[in-house]
Length: 135
Ligand code: HEC
Image (cartoon, rainbow, N blue to C red; front, side, top):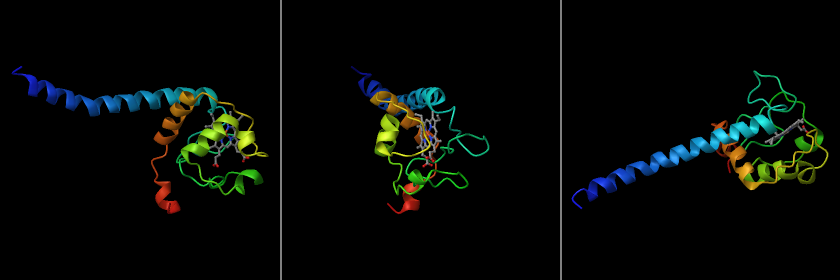
């Protein structure tokens, strides 16, 4: 039992590392799913042309606000912000969530898959849009 404090210290030190690893694995899985489900239409930034708007900093971005992208009126006039809940609803049933946009139906109903993709979208959103929106 003499080593107990040492073991405890080692465990506590391991916890943040474990959280980092978990986050890393989640983002990596999200990237793989993004590549499979979204990438054929969405690039991360404008240096890579894509049919849909680039999704960098999409988290808490105002819908229809990527500079220079030709949005549908439905999306541009929606007045919504891409919160995690809105992104989930959009992935699950974009037509039902917001009818009349240019995005073909994507039906990702599995919450775990949504979690992974959200983690990836968060990782490509270093900008604090909440501060910009004043929310
Ligand atoms: C078949 C092509 C296609 C696929 C696949 C696709 N999208 Fe889209 N997406 C679009 C298009 C086109 C738009 C623009 C819609 C408009 O202007 O009406 C769009 C818009 C969006 C927007 C709104 C962005 C903004 O700037 O307001 C988000 C968020 C989004 N897509 C997320 C996703 C995610 C996440 C996936 C994968 C799960 C995905 N999309 C799959 C074509 C696609």
